[in-house]
Length: 307
Image (cartoon, rainbow, N blue to C red; front, side):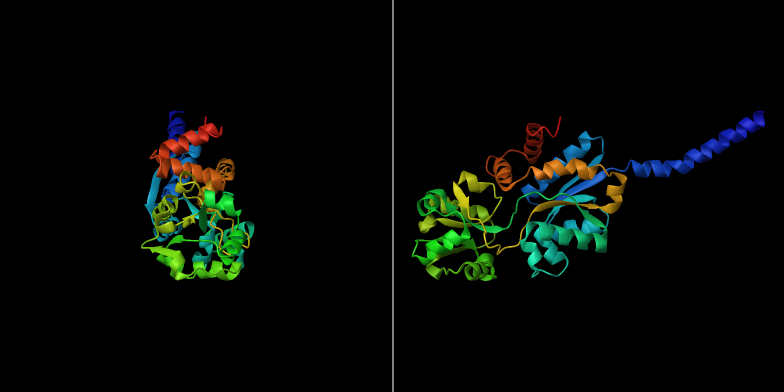
C-alpha cells in the first residue's frame, strides 16, 4: 500500500508539473501599448482599466513610439494590443489609393480582413470618429456665412470670401490641399495661406483663434483638443475627399483566443468615443493639463463602464 501511495504521489507531481506551463500561459498578462499621441495613450489607458476591472492582468507599455515602432512590436508579439487608425491600413498594405479608406465601414472591413489574413491580427470595434486632417473655421465666421461643410467653404471661397488658412507645409505642398481644392472646386491663392513649419496643429489653431494676420481657418486633426477651446467649427468632408482615420484597437489573435471576453469589454468603450467626445477628452489633456490616467478613469466612471 505504501509503495502504491508513493507511486500515486509521484504521478500526481508529474501531472502537476506538466500542467504548470499551460496554467502559466493562461495567466499571461495582456501587454497594452499605444503610439506617442495623447489620444492614442488615453484610449489605450481606458482599455487597460476595463481589462483590469474584469480581472485580466495587464502590462502598461503606453506611448511606446511612432506608428512603425508600435506596429512592428505588435507583429513581433512584443505587445498584444494597441489603438491604430483605420486609414493607416492603406499604408500597411500598400494600397493608399483604394477608395475604401474614405468610407468608415468599408475601410474598417478591408483593413480587418487584410490584417487577419496576413498577420492574424484582429481589428476590434472602431470608434465612430475620424482623426483625419480637416479645416476648422472660427465659429463667428462659420455662423455668419453658414459654413458647416467643405461644400459650404468652397462656395464661400469662390464668392470672394475673405479666407486666410494657417496650415503646415506638408498639408499645403504634399497634395492634401490640392485634393480638397479639386474635389470641392475652389482655389486658395498664396496670399490666403500662412504656412507654418512642422505639423503641430496647436500653432494653427492658436493662429485662427487669435486672428493672427487675419487667420480665420486652421488645418486641424478633427479630434484635436484645442478645437472647442478655440471656438472653431470643423467642416464636414461631405464629399469624402480624405481617408477616414477611426481609432480602432488591434489585438493578436492568440491573445484574443486566450481572453475572448476582451472584444465585448472593449466594444462599449469604443462605441462611446464620437468626435465631440474625443475633442472634449483631448481638451482636458492637451489644454487643461489633466493626466491621461485621470481623464480615462473619470470618463469610464461617468459612462458607467468602470465601477
